[in-house]
Length: 261
Image (tube, rainbow, N blue to C red):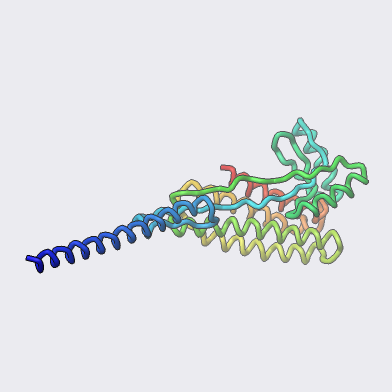
């Protein structure tokens, strides 16, 4: 009788041990799942929870970089803004009309506030009504993407930033006579080819975000194609540095617009 009781005791103890292991395992899985879900709020880039749920559920979080525009004037009337913008473009500024709460005339855009403030101070000395305006957009989260769509959209965002930085670099070199218009146009031609290759490799999904991404890439290619025209880089209209600055502000405007959709 004693032996049976001892046997029963051992079986109950073994059962409890198995149950404890199961509870620990369940707690571990729950903690891992909580970490995956919470990462959608604290981690950038891609969150893929398909391995947990057994379904395809991908979110893409895109962090917008702030840029700092030096503005020269603000107008209530659009035609007044356009007229003034043309006059500053002749002096080598971007002259882009940014439509927000007012029509702001953007001279140039910088990725560092200190650079923008230095230019602003110099323009104030020259009697311009210069200010620094921050171009910003909220963090964008895109849900319901498959892997190919996610990669396409990520590539486009990266390319927008790469394009801005390359065009900024070329306009700066032109301003300090470190390059000439023809050589700058050749560099832009290479960038255009990269943009066309990127566009050709994009996913052809009818997903809303993919359609918008393709439209933005089409606009970008159009801007780069314009900059490679002989009449443009030879300065038959505005100075070439102004054309490049105008183009990179347009790139950022499209980028910000997409991020706000």
